[in-house]
Image (tube, rainbow, N blue to C red; front, side, top):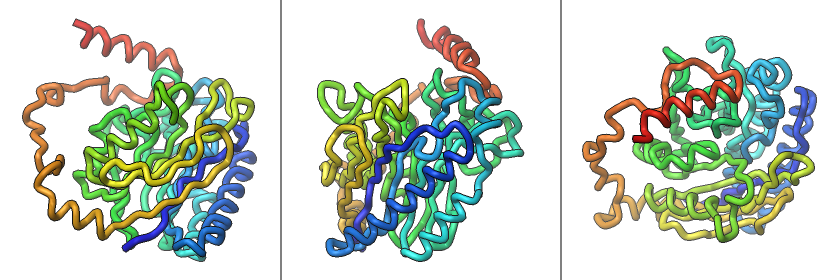
Length: 327
């Protein structure tokens, strides 16, 4: 059980309407085809991961504007096209994110990535920790009566896969939950901007990816946004997409800096599973003492408050929570 995984960073313009989403999706399907074909002499590329906002970024300031102009239901024509390609090539694709609407949750726009394989759409993950205050997407935890699995882990022929989006990775609990549910390969779909990128002195991107691999004895395949500042203002995007093994070793990385790039590296499931079975030292999941942490016994950031519509909504919630914790 050894294959190549590809972290595929994009440098695409921000769509301002749904027609632009179609152009970006077509470009990513072309990347899948040439990556599988181009690396064939070196191994079988079975898993491909794309960045956050590769289909569409939140270029409008409010949730109603995003819902009107960019949000799509899932499944949609683009996920269907990915599924046809995945079946033809025998690969699994963790898509770049969509801005998603769901009629069950009126007024909510989700930041959503899909796992698609030869069998079709396998799972969707909605960002649990939006990058507030700027992102006006709804977390599943904002919505009373939310009915879907919050942290899906999918059993596939290439391992048990779990995903989280960008800012989610600054919360180790997210990846811990995925690992506790069995995830062996942790996928990061990200748009991580400068200065918190892949180079010192504030290389959070690299540090966090390696730490989450170590903490959970898991592979990490992390695709970061590579858009230029001109294509994706107001930030610049450092790329640096990477693969990390279960001991935190950086096994492949795209050169830091913007631009469309693909980096591949091996995922050795047999080695991972053998280490998880044999280790008694540094087996953090087995050593975990969750009952030791009172911070997790009380509610935190206000859950069930409803979907935010504006940055002002997020600012008010952050202020309320800070008053509660800044003692």
